[in-house]
Image 1 (cartoon, rainbow, N blue to C red):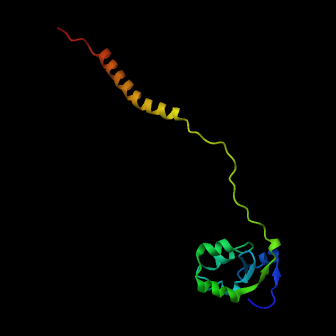
Image 2 (spheres, one colour; image 1 turned 90 degrees about the vertical axis):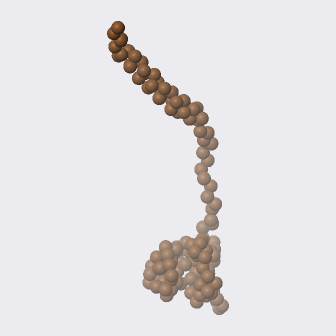
Image 3 (cartoon, rainbow, N blue to C red; image 1 turned 135 degrees about the vertical axis):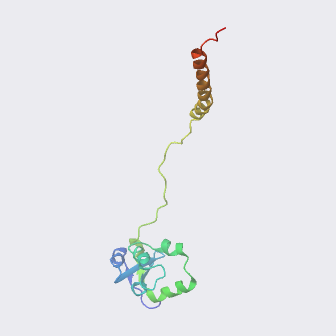
Length: 138
């Protein structure tokens, strides 16, 4: 990676986003032309193509590339990115929501009904049987 370094904007790099011309930004500062490597990439060309137009560092690191893969990057280096052109990463903050307290009353009512309903059915059955039973003749 010697010599004079060319500096590109993210807009310039993102124009190189197809199989005949594919550039990636790694570590938010280096630009790589991986067009020649698309066919040989073990993960397929779709993986590389989907990482164009943004900082692809997370995609690159998540896979866990070997040291030999990292060494290969030198031959694809074309320049640096204008760091002022890359949007800063923001940490995701979930929207504030009121704390949810589950109401234990409904749980108690369900358990009570599970106990009482069978008893009521049994009592009703005995009541109907007693009412419909004809008295014994003597």
